[in-house]
Image (tube, rainbow, N blue to C red; front, side, top):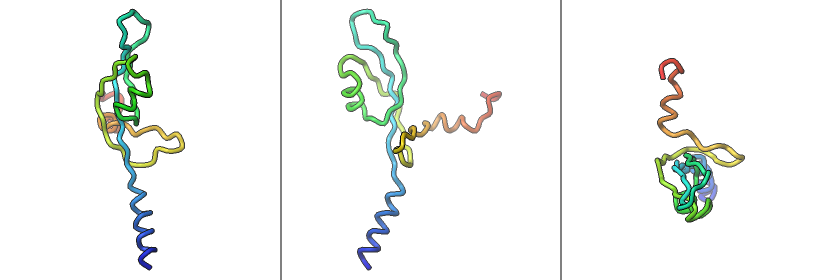
Length: 96
């Protein structure tokens, strides 16, 4: 009976998963003129992992903001929107 209660408790806790989302400003880190453009990217990789995975010293990566999302990220689901995008979701286009 105790094992069954423990398993049910564990399964119930798994439903409250969360993950952190990071937003970066990425630009080329080069002394030579390049055609590469700067851009903003949203990722679930932490700053060290993102830089190591996407070019190491070839890019300059600045953390813009971060937030926590609730839910499941499998099956190719995109990360949740940031708090500022969520607050604008209820505003119609003519009020922006």
